[in-house]
Length: 219
Image (cartoon, rainbow, N blue to C red):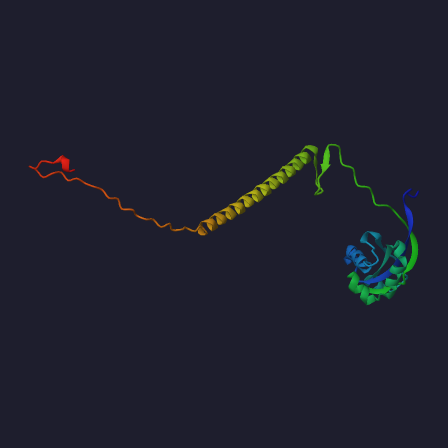
């Protein structure tokens, strides 16, 4: 089988663990996740780890029924020495706690090289469809409609915020003006101006009593 042009060989670390239990009850995903946690400091993701069930040397029938072997390959690249060092420091007890499976025995790590394949390209969208930010794939018209709806919602929110800020400013200015007006009223000094009353002398001529004649020459 020809090798892909973009595939490259990378350094790897391999080890085999004998697991106590029934193979059908073995959780492969949990085992790989446990190894990724073990090599977290070295930056090894779960996608760089693979496992396979391997045959063992001749054992008793009882051992063959109660144990099975799992070989793990870690594509480690520049972290190969660090990964191998971590594995050498582990014991069956610590591996059991980390991997979630009862490890009966473990071999020494072996450094090698494996052919690393690039991740598959993302599938292209069918014509007339759009992928939204949340990952959903919808027809173009629906995607444009949802985008327009999102834009209108954003505009409405912006307008609402602007109106709210303007109203708050008007309210603050009104309160300041009212307080200033009240201060002016309370600070006005009313001065009392003395008023002199000038009495007016009026001369009133009483009409003469009845039967008397008024002598105009004496007036």
